[in-house]
Image 1 (cartoon, rainbow, N blue to C red):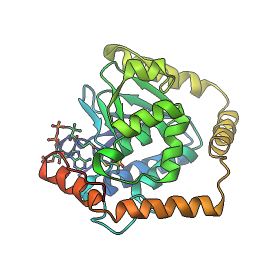
Image 2 (cartoon, rainbow, N blue to C red; image 1 turned 180 degrees about the vertical axis):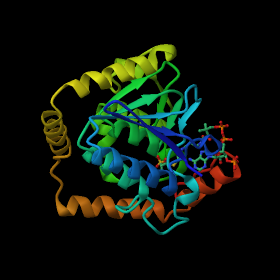
Image 3 (tube, protein in one colour; image 1 turned 90 degrees about the horizontal axis):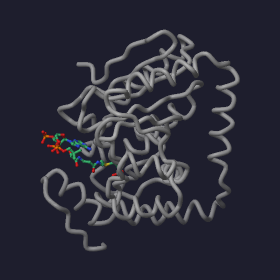
Length: 259
Ligand code: YXS
């Protein structure tokens, strides 16, 4: 059963998340379908991609599929994790990927949206960074995605509180490009895509790649990286990590004890 719908409108590829029963959770299967669609769009030399959910959805995506997070003692967001693969595919896709958002966006889906090149949202959209809600030690490239979207102070507030940020506040803070009334969202987004398609695709592709390289150009010493990985291991080996996942599955509030 398809977990996404795809379409092509002139030179724009469209990917619609379509697994409402699981609130479009980013499972490996769903991510594999997105990645395959991006490869097809690239082969067809499409000049923009719109990544959206079903019209009128209350939840754009509930984030990483919690059922696919490792139980314990293994990095939950290592290089080969499907979510990490999706982020890299979006960042390296040789044309702009525009996230069109209605409803709430959670955790790994929030990073996915922030990894997109442009974000157009309806007033109903909210954005939440949720590792602290589940006891997950986010990975350092993911933290950089968040810091490239929000200021350090806002990034800390979102990460430490795990509270959703409204579309209006996100636009005011420059975290998203436009907030548009829901009934105008599709027309506005596709007009933006059409404008991009009328410009020089090679020039756009090289500027997107330059900005990716520059946005990721942060010096980190081998010692610094090893320190981060050591700290993350303490977290994903902790009782709190297991409690966070267990509480989610039990549909109850977690009780974190700091060990
Ligand atoms: O009980 P059934 O079988 O019907 O399944 C329920 C949920 O378990 C399922 N579901 C998910 N399954 C796997 N992974 C998920 N992330 C996930 N979210 C939901 O979908 C069915 C319907 O969910 P339900 O009843 O809660 O729907 P709702 O409309 O009442 O509430 C929608 C949400 C999104 C507010 C609620 O589902 C929710 O809070 N979901 C979790 C949001 C979240 O914390 N996501 C972060 C996932 S972990 C992640 O992204 C990173 C690793 S991190 O945390 O580090 O950022």
